[in-house]
Image 1 (cartoon, rainbow, N blue to C red):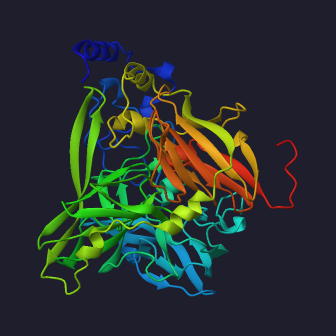
Image 2: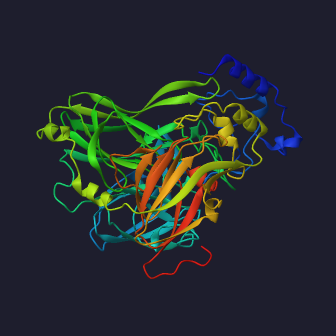
Image 3: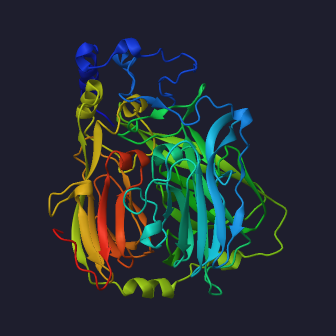
Length: 570
């Protein structure tokens, strides 16, 4: 807990802060009153302060981000748009073609209508289901008013279809079509989303899953049913969805936390099952920044697979911690007739008082009634050993080293934000579960806070880095999340086009591995990942907090084929 001396120091420094003036470069005459209703022109209004733990200083009352307010579809009449329909499963055989677009739709969230976006007119987008080893085509048309691309997250597909503007393809302009060719070499749950201003487009509903089925019998244990669960949040106040930054993202320090929780795009998710059923949930976190800790109301949970593969052995857990972009496959046994609450159960941090704040938010419910005719309780209790996964991972033992530090550089942040952060340095939680300083986070933009990946071997930063690898390499990356940086933050680290295993965390060997494409790096931790380099082309690795990505937290790497020469100067 924060000492009384520290609290007095913090208050004294805040009270000593000068009143904002023309010296801070802001034109306060242009700022709206924060309680004004939305007008015909889009203007900033204060970020919702629900759950705020840091007090708001009077001199910040009229401050707004140093970028323009922006909201796609602003001025559209939601009633004139087609209503988005729930996600559908699209079963695709080898060689099939799916025609899909991104468009504006009408969405109803907690009883109110909003102009949002959808893939294929659905929320979430259609679930593309195919067998491992198959290849399919997606003819994608952009019918929104922003340029976009589609990134097929986690797939080891051909580089030309990875969806990275300026690296693998040109942006898809409004009205244009781009044909993606997808291949599915790995069993598991994957997802797709934009890779241009995903802090906006993904947040407004552009996301969907891909489920790759195994071709072997008995690949997974038997279950009574399978259910995809996409976890999300969105930031809404009484006037609607809070605007985004036009020239650069807002919320650059911590990412844009939402105040409304969504499961499969809705606030009142409920699943009806028979008592005694074992349900396989395919969990995906599509939130901009929120890490969830999912609990199933006392039902027993068994983790069976991660992003790209089964674990070496199945494992019972109390909850599932899932960072942005991660996926987990879990079996849950609803052993009696009752209602089970699916909750996000966390310990938030009150930065001002230096205390932890327990918080439990309901995500949805599972209502179990009657009694299942197919009792799988005995099979559920077994923690299966997966020799195939272990043998696949055991083959990778030679590697090259890279050392990467996660940090941040700032320029022109609000003086009060700087002052608060200078004082609040005694403790930062390994994972930022909640938004404890919404005003200061909102005011920080991607122009003022530049998140950085630092190659400690060369001194190069972020997109200055272009590691040169070749197919067949096994590369170890040691990632250190610097706790001494300005407001350190957990980061979900994503590698495009390849797969990796987490081998060590803070020097402790990981004794139950699975192939992944995204792994969370807590504050102060060192995480070793071993990358299986199989896919030639130019690729990216980056933090999957949307605002951090757009604030510069990304690097490039090149994978050469067997006969390709290394790039000049690399």
